Image (cartoon, rainbow, N blue to C red; front, top):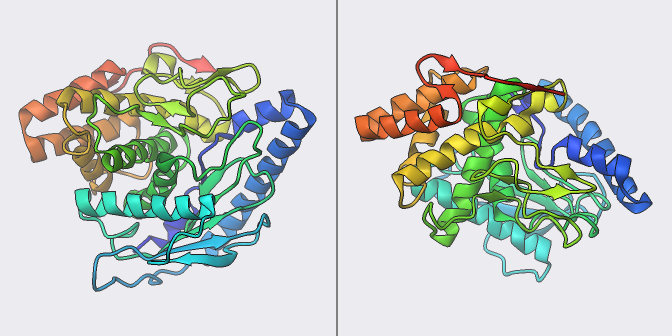
Length: 364
């Protein structure tokens, strides 16, 4: 079951706050209004999240006798009170509301991936019900995991579409729950960037698994479909080519580095968790494509085993996680697989045995 004290680890949103701040500074009156409202809501939710963590008690989730999802979708009706009115339960027919049905299907696809690939029964591996709320807030430009459920905004319709449109976004946010349960990675600095990266990695794997794509055929994008046609960009992030997902006059340029040469030292965004996650993201992409075939069959199994590795500390650095992936690769698949993993990390500037190398750092 989820660790009670882990529930305060992060209030994890798919959009980084820096992107919303750029919109608030540069956008039209309508765009600024939506961005500022989203930032204000996010700040309020962080306070609520921290308070809930102090009051959390263990033992609230009981294992189910059979491995099957238990989904409930709620409608906030553009308010911010959670969870909202129940609009679809497990087994119900589609509602014809796109957000409701996309959330329902996305929760199911994520559950199916974790069960069928990793034999994990829901977020806590004990049958935790999967809850989601749609139509949250007015023009709310974000989606998040709040420690107990998923929450989706409808977007502003100007720069952002509805946040249920991307399966990898849904899987990304649910994976924050898995990471809280397993590793409790502190949401700051490199451990926070690892937290974000794990969500991107498994978000991409859920999408690839649902589409039955090989590593070579996958797009390796996170948030494809979130941008409207007004935005110059294809997605929020790219594991294949960090730093290339968008380049827009209003939103700015994707600032994710692919290697430690571009590691960003900053006090913003909890130490750049949404930015520096590009480095471990790219290491996973390199490992998965080097193995070939389906990314979940080797690279995904190794990353999942490393996430569950008891030697992984909540304050893990990139180098520490690299060491766990290397050890798990050797344990699961042998020395050749271990060499593939080590080379993937070396390619992004992280030495498995001797810590992370930072050749040059950008400071913000």
